[in-house]
Image 1: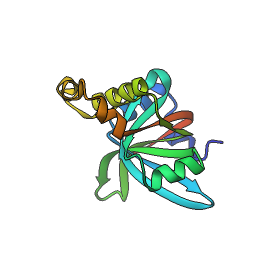
Image 2: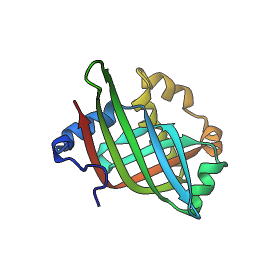
Image 3: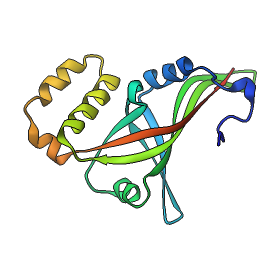
Length: 159
């Protein structure tokens, strides 16, 4: 079910190009659904290529948590926006759409792992932030880490 790429000339066909988009990215827009009601939210992420997994940070309660508990099936997109091309009515971009399953991580070791993946994605000097979290067990008790396991992923490019 590759809904994302209709035009073969725009498909990112190699995993390397898709990985580049995901490694550069900082935010993913996530689509969730509960009882036929859609919900979309944009979150910063950490991507772990070896496990084809995204990690997100969230509060333990709220709309997205309710939606995930009701229906863990999700879809997300990451966009590398290289700008509008003046005079051509065109846009330079690469995008990735992933379908998968969202999980609420409860295990403290996995929360630490997910947090580390997230910080490495976002921070220029991740070791400084990780050091500040060292020994703060209560920090992991109050946070919710979300884990998105990819089932299918496609990429697309323009100009």
